[in-house]
Length: 416
Image (cartoon, rainbow, N blue to C red; front, side, top):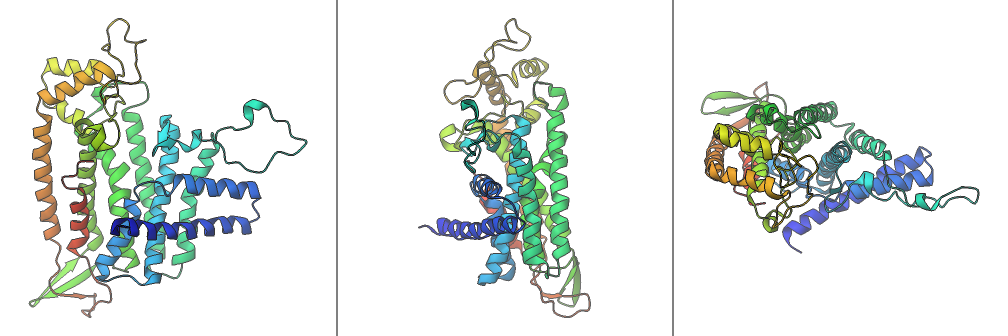
């Protein structure tokens, strides 16, 4: 087993303990067997199946901050925080799939479309038609999403109630959940289902969606949780060569992690257009799905009026016939050819992206943002003694540049 696989396996073993604890808590509350089985299926189906990068990042960050391997108890607590983020992610995805009428997620049916868990057998007095023997989860998934989110606060209360930053841990989950929901709202009203209107798009709108919908919970939250677990205060001081420098670590982390999260999403958008399916692991669909992507927003700022006309008539369409042409309203193929998602309309948009030089623009963007992020990371003061407000040596480790270099190293230049 590789080191990466072993790391994931160790993390997944903690999930089983957490899942069983959540089920046991519901059992003690008197929930019937069929409800317990349903909840277990909900947790197993929706929480552990992804890449787990957010959750694992909590553990990585705690290790970097402490500068050593973690004790068994420290690892478990860091993993609880990591799985709390994965529970939050699952909550968002279950709800998002319903709102988007999505069909699949992570290579399997979306939870709301999956067969309902096989709970207790029907009683002899029940009436069951053949068409309803194996119904889908359906809109019960809405309550399932709520339970995934609420599980976070049970875990925090059980494992961190005595921690000096307990209230801050609870508060940051509430705050970032709210921020992510704001981002989802902006995304939904920018590109409502069935409405293709590029006038609603802009790079500023894209930045707003990315910041609130992705960057806060995917990049800021893992690091902030690790910092809180290590009891890093809102302000500490670095004493070095007769100078004392005040450091606000949470503000500093935010100033790096939000741009880092924006860079990550711009990468995702560009790879959706540029990466071959066999490399990306899926067929990119941003063009046919009418996504407010960095690619289309950037191209809108580069193209001529004639090229903009091509965008307006082809973006967000799955067929071969441009918008406004006879037959366009009825001719909407679901799948293109040769690794494309939407036929000739998508092909015309991709050709336009190439014509305006989007690959070169992205390469320049990536080079620039990499330099800017490294400059921000280099600005973190490390040399000297970490002290508290009274000038005494602090018990916490202080912020480390390696936390951010680790994140940046994982995503810079990635191809999928």
